[in-house]
Length: 137
Image 1 (cartoon, one colour):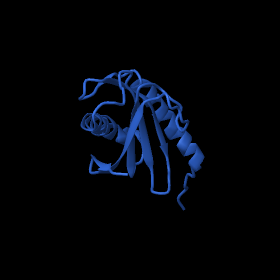
Image 2 (spheres, one colour):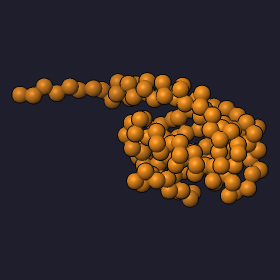
Image 3 (cartoon, helix red, strand yellow):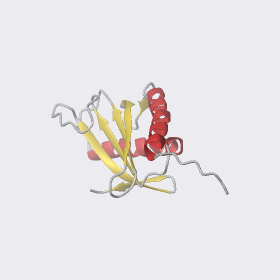
Image 4 (cartoon, one colour):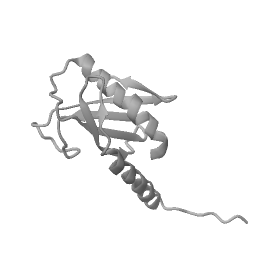
């Protein structure tokens, strides 16, 4: 009879979380030059399991972001952050998500707390064969 090791989901999440936390700390040091010329850095990466499946949120800060950039410029920057930053890191994080959300703000903010002084945009992408596909809300 084979012995099976049972790892409680909370312990597995904690273990994955520690690895992801270490990666986040390292990633926060990295400066990214976006197609628009803005310089950004990762604030944090969050994950949860909403009703539609696993989702990763990559939250970036670009101090020179005004929120008044034209739509095409913003979308190009967000697409770049999804395809060139988030996608290559997904295999290091854990299970493949059904969705990736990319946000860009002018400064750090607490997730889920409304702060009207923070200029922020975000978009959701589904992931298919290593490609970000914009999910129009």
